[in-house]
Image (cartoon, rainbow, N blue to C red; front, top):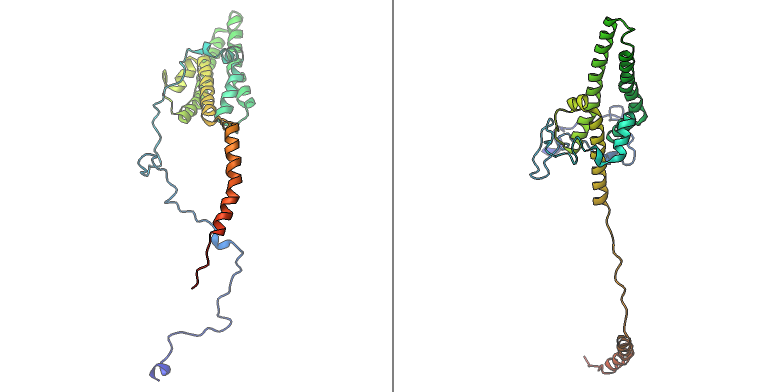
Length: 244
């Protein structure tokens, strides 16, 4: 009785004070939850959590040397006569979202156009003011270094993709000094890695050997099949009824 008369600790809500139930669509409560603590990179060997600024070491050697242009005659001819096309193909292989035509046109305007302007300046040097010639040469020299830095950034992406070393020197310096050789080397490197992945992914399945039965085996099989029903009948006839 004392418990019944005691004041209740709960307050009864009126209808207007009751919480409004929201409509829940099917499957809404089963959505995956993004936990930032679980989205971390781990070492494949020791499974330790790696810091966000960690980058794998670049300790792999290039499959071909910087002067190995003759190892792939096709890329050597393309890089010699149409380096813009080879540069566009290399960029498209590194970045699939960029079509090869865009870097090809950019390379043709900056590099081939600059070379043509330098040739015209040297050809008509006697008809152009010396100060103007110096300004043009300085501008072409600056543009060449900028093109070397631009193409060297894509070489750096290739090195990060395959964990390659800076060989023979820094990526931008390689393109500034050995631009044509660098283009051919990058094309050969991607071509070799592509062939390695295709070879590892392709598997050969040999068909099972054909099994044939000799005449003696066929006779043994037929005799065993013919004797099996009779043996089953004899076993069935040998059964006895045991009273309980």
